[in-house]
Length: 245
Image 1: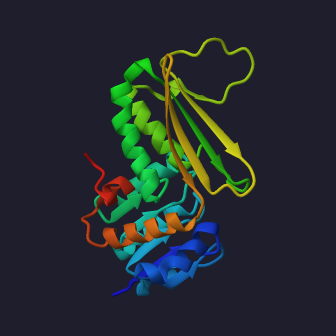
Image 2: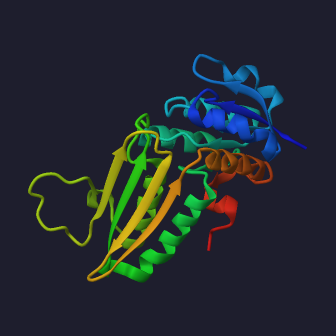
């Protein structure tokens, strides 16, 4: 049976992609809404919410999901720390919440490989993250890059003071306890992420390149179906795919 989805952000790039692939993914967009629409209008016909809208809208959508006791899949990026805390507080223990910066199976495999490689390479290899996106993307670093950075920070026990966003001027030698972060914007690049592990005499690069936005749409719909069978809690796409070891 098709699952009935409330799609918030339906007229954006991702919203259009989700609507396009939904029939092949066993999903029906029962209510599509965007800026200026009231999501509560069509919520009664829906089993799950997928949100690809704007960061300031997501807390409102989270409250609606809790009120109706249905799962929420968040693909929106760019939330402030305060917005993130609000969303987590509203949903905690009440609904299944899948929240990922990227819903691609390939990207989440990149996350997994980064988590495995970092402790093997340890401090003798210095980590840098590079991401590329289209010129319309509003936030930087991307949600996907942010997740990769979290993985590296957790492995190397580095706080946010050790993150360097780009470099300019006479910055001196690179400290070993640093993670460099770089964002490129231009054209119609769907998304590209590389984690560099730079050692003496050798370098490892883990790269994912997306050429079709529909890979993210399929992943989000897969997550929505998975969430319907879960207990209340916070999940990421690695949990959806079973990449948790």
